[in-house]
Amino acid sequence: MGRPLSTAIVGLGLTEMGKVYGRSASSLAAEAVRKATDDAGLRLSDLDGLLVSSGVTQSLNVGLAQTLALPDLNVLSQVSAFGATAGVMVAQAVQMIEAGAATTIACVFADTPLKPARKAGEAWAGRPRELKGMAGWSAFSGAVNPTVLYAVCARRHMERYGTTSAQLAEIAVAQRAWAALNPLAQMRDPITVDDHQASRWIADPLHLLDCCLVSNGAVAVIVSSAEKSERPVHVWGYGQAHQPRRMHAGSDWGLLTPAGRSGAQAMSMAGISVDDVDVAELYDCYTYTVLVSLEDYGFCAKGEGGPFVADGRLGPGGKLAVNTGGGQLSGYYMWGFTPLSEAVIQARGEGGERQAPSNDVILVSGNGGILEHHSTLVLSPHPGALR
Image (cartoon, rainbow, N blue to C red):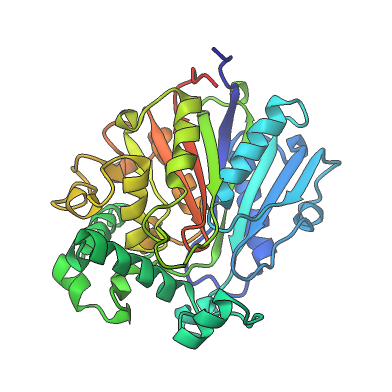
């Protein structure tokens, strides 16, 4: 048996989220790192590592170290695995600290895709690229942005397993109920399944309320020795898995994701099974992402995600606490730092009205590309996981 991991998340910093204009991603990132450092009871000079991640604008880089006037660093890197980046960054920070390469590493994400007088959806407009192979098919067919491609995935699941739009609506409704209890959430007004069904189509079968928010803001966490904190969030396990976008006839693209392999790695390291999970903070760029991730993690069998999410199971008072801050559908969209930040809040017992009844084991997922990249963390307020 391995020795217990001694590394933990010891600080969390969040800026204002949503329509935050007039500030650069670097400015927001610096604020988040300062807040996270203060939250950890540390000084900026205590940092000897910095990992940065930028979203769709790609406007944050290692120059943040100079912005923060950090002293000599042992670790400095820009990390990108799209929406899986947060889990990858925390895992890298843990590995470097455990190996003695650094002692205290800040991991930060910032983005500013929202612009005044510009529609939020324009932030996700496809960028010009060389039209070879499947890229040519995408352009010819109109599948030129993530929403259209996720809609294809959702439609495949519906045709294969009988999943319905009303079942996807249950996910949106549950997460909005959590968001109503979260002062940081952008969207807090309750919604019903009927509201979801009446919301406009974005890409059949996805409605507006199936799709995530667009947000400006930043989130940072500090990873260090658990001994440095009075309220550490222990990293019990981590994993990642990646697969190419196989869109040929007969493929399982969109139906089976790397979450299964990533989750198995993390849970094996943590010494737990999916039955031990109290809270699941799942990447939710779309309602369908939540449904297929629940299946692939093993919360339910493949194809049974639709019935599994029904009847308020995922909302406040339900059998499984999922995306307790409202997630990216109703809370705020900070790539994988949305589920990570809420996991830290839940592990510390600081959720207020939205605090889950049990928080011993928290599963955190990240998803990037079109279900191509996945990261998983297992977090806990308690020490003792074995690797």
